[in-house]
Length: 283
Image (cartoon, rainbow, N blue to C red; front, side):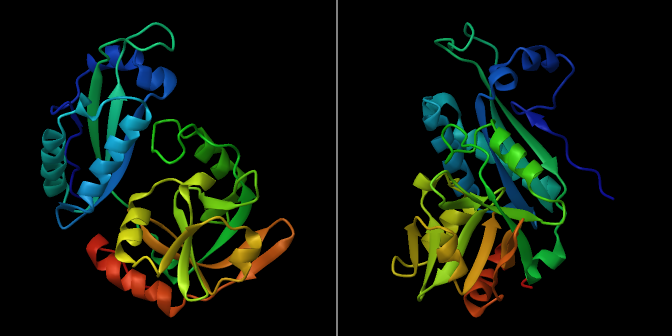
């Protein structure tokens, strides 16, 4: 197996001395920072501009200026590592370093950028349809639309999902479907796609953004909906920018089966549009 290219910290390989600032960092102590994970195929970082946009929006949600980072330099580092990696994934983390007193930040906060190349395991069977667990979201992270370092809600949600299920569809305190644990959710009903609005607690995922841009305004609706609307849907899928679209064919909870769906033509069309870009199977 080909060795992975080295990790990059501020444009260089990390050294043992970097542990000193990392252990004292606000990123480690408070989860202060943002991250994104890019699919790499044929040496290209897929949807890189959307991933950079998400990092910038995440920083802004933490009340930092987007001028905190040199974005062209970060893009160049991502492109170079993607070319070296060829196939896999890159996790890009923007980390708040040491500084401040307690929770109060320093006026001129130090930041670091970290890029971690990793292999990606593709679950081939998931593209033929998966069963999802139906569960309450264990609690909203602050700024839930942003992908900041605090992922406690997702950790607890994963613990609540039985091991026999690859994903869970989650509902918020109002009973509205919000998202899956590591993916956004879409369903097809009455001639249009639907997806939870960000107000429901959904993450502003890169694949979600791509789909909203790909579909015309009369083809997709950002909405609030409960279990009944899902049960009436013709097709359902979950998605992210690493693994693409996973059709959902069954929904269960402790009472048994709540709904069945087929892997229908609308889902297959979207898989055909996006999966070649991601180097992923169509079924």
